Image (cartoon, rainbow, N blue to C red; front, side, top):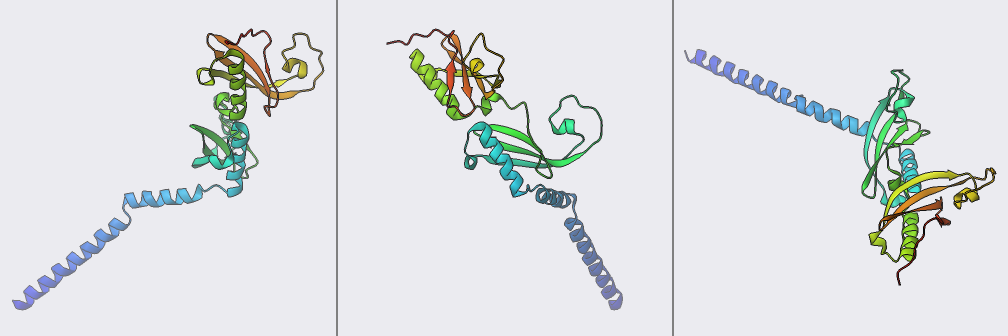
Length: 226
């Protein structure tokens, strides 16, 4: 009888031990841990090569006028773009399958988030065209234009507002300077057409890419208050 009780106790103990081992094993490969492992591996694979990250930040800095050190990459997603149209942010694309391996990268520029697509080699970098030109207009150029409008109108810069900024290639210096009758000489000036709201008026400025030349539309009549 004692032998039977001892055998039963050992059997129960061993069974309980195996159950504990099985439960621990199940815990080690639970779906939650598998997901965490997958996310860890994905996070590791999402790491952008430093050279590509630097290239993207330099592009964002050049477009925005914000120093590179003040920009931040906030998100990196490994992505297979089905075709070049999708890679280039096309909204209406064919179903052609011509994949481009790369990343979707989000950069923090001031209070904005800019989305880039970049291929694996880093040779193709494309900024989402939905990024507003107002976000891209260099801060230094915006400041110079607002300061000029303030000096001409007597309105404080805080009360002025840039309502539109359009990147533009002016055919020549005559066009840049709002000439109405210009020769067809092609001597392009890269820059901006910027519209500023001054009280109830809208003033149009032309600025070159560096901001060294800024011209107000001569049709604007402004009298500075004394």
